[in-house]
Each structure stands twice: as C-alpha cells, then as structure tokens.
Image 1 (cartoon, rainbow, N blue to C red):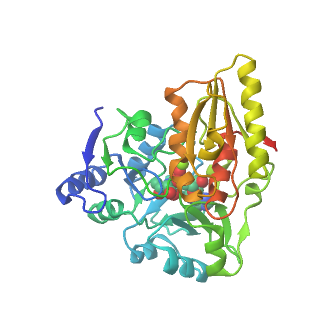
Image 2: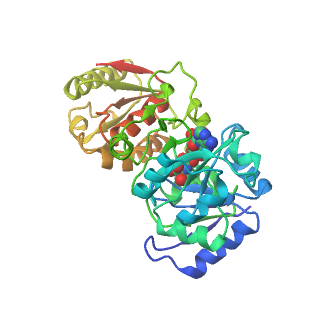
Image 3: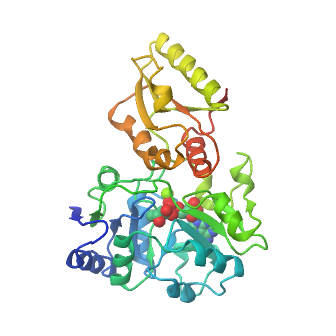
Length: 348
Ligand code: TXA
Ligand code: MG
C-alpha cells in the first residue's frame, strides 16, 4: 500500500484536503493525523473492523484500549453512560486540550476499542486540524499514537512514515506537535479521580481543579499492575539500552559524565539524552541528543521523542539519559524516560 501524504497548514488547514482524509476514515481506512500532543493513527471509532486495522498496523496488543477523539463536548454524551462531576469539572476547564477522561462506556462502542473494559477513554484535542478532521468524518475517531508499538510516539509526520509508511492509507502533515508528550489520562469513575498517565495537563493543574487526585500506584513503583493497560508495556524505547540518571541536577550531570567516560573507555559507542547545560561538559566522542534547557520542561517534552529517535540514525551501543525535576510537565517526561529505560536507573 502506498501511504498518501497530505500537507496542510496547522492553523488554517485546506478543507478539501481534510475532506479527502475524512472520506478515507468513513470508508474504513487508516489516517494518521496531528494533535497538539503527538500524531495519532485514526480510524472510525464506531467501526470494529476499521479499528482492528489500527492494532495490525501498529503491532499493538489487543488488550490495550484506544482513546476516542471527538470534535465537540456534546459528542461525549452518546459515548458514556454518565458524566461524573469530576469529569465535568475537568472537561470544562481543559477541553479542548491534552486531557483524556475515562468514564463508563455506552453500548454503541465496539469491544475492540475498550479492550473488554467497561469504561472508555475520550478526549477532545486542541489541534484545529484534528478537530476539523473529526467533525468532517462525523464519527468519533479512535486514535492511539501513530508509532509502531513499543517505539517512541511520533511528533512529526516523518516519524509516522518511518514507522508506518506503506501500512496505512494516509498521513496528514501539519508540522511538529507543540506539547510533545501524550495526553493526561484520568479515571473519573473512582470516588477520587485517579491519574493513570501523566501528560500534557499537569498534576498541579488537576489538583487545582479537583482538590484531590489519586495517583495510580503503578506510576510510583514498578511492581504494581497499572490500571491503564497500555502503561504496563515497555514503551518509548530507543534502539539501544538506556540508563536513566536521577537526582539533584548537579549530581546527575556529574554522574552522567562519569558513566559516559567509563563506557567510552570500554570501547563503546555512547549516546546521551541530555540538557544543553550538561552536553557542553561531555566527552566530545559522545553522540548527544539535546532536549533543551534543564529548567524548561515544556521544551524538553516537545523535544523528547525526537531525542529518543535520534539514535535510529546514529547507532550507539548504550545510552545515558539525564533525569529532570518532576514538577509540572517534568512528571510526564520522567514517566516516559523511566519506561524508555525499562526502569534501568541510577540514583546520583
Ligand atoms: O495524546 C494522546 O492521548 C495521543 C493522541 C493521538 O491523542 N493518543 C495516545 O493513545 O496516546 P495511546 O493509545 O497511545 O494511549 C492511550 C492510553 C493507553 O495507556 C491506554 O491503556 C489508556 O490510554 N486507556 C485507553 N482506554 C482506557 C480505559 N478505558 N481505561 C484505562 N486506560 C485506558
Ligand atoms: Mg502510545
């Protein structure tokens, strides 16, 4: 299959082009499209067969449920049996945006979407391209991140092509994503809402709106079984084993420098995922993917997956990654780095 590439402007997408893409979706095809977080791989969310194609193209385990994407708040009603007060409060504040709510599912939703759960995850993206596409399709669009399962999510159309070129009907290219990490997933069916996946809406923002938020234990320890099925899989992994260094910034930078020197002395080709400040002090033989300034979690989030994918073209034997503070977007960044490193961490 030849994957078509549709180029559109991110703020004023050409309607004719989006109509073509929407027709592919309503015809049962697969179209990757940009959102503010990452590129998604879309299919008609009410069509079990079309949605099955998503799992095949990605190589995704079938027990990992999909997020349904809608273009307006009113579309939520037909997808769930109740909108709990916590969901209502979050939606009023953060939709459209990088927030996914989990609610009791309505009967019209195919089992293939929910992986057999009695809940469904729904989000209304902020991206104009995404919302206009969904509105033109006239159905909720099921869309996981448009990567091969286990790989870092794509934040550009080129990354989608690298993983899924030839396996999907089309990709809409509207340039790089602004947030860079996936949406925050919140289970709104529990008495106190539970954070299942940290993402573009920060924990601090959730607490400001809700007062109290539980955190899925699996986010804190690697032993607990996550309640968000997708969180149990190794994920975001670059193409060489990665070790994450965590702790005080200065100690992390120093420990990372030592690890790099040691590995180079052992004759290894070494990669590093690091801040600008740390990069300048590293052995010049290192292949460095710089994610931004240490204190700028928003820029680090936006650059994170490109940094992990940098080692696709620059093969290395080992990678060391510099951890950052878990404040704000740092919590999502550190969650992804821990998963990308398979929890291989060093406390500096
Ligand atoms: O930002 C995003 O959310 C992107 C863009 C494309 O919208 N999508 C995305 O989808 O990240 P995906 O499939 O890569 O991640 C969906 C996450 C998985 O961890 C999945 O297990 C969880 O949401 N999830 C989906 N339905 C769920 C449910 N009913 N209960 C708990 N977790 C659920
Ligand atoms: Mg994903």
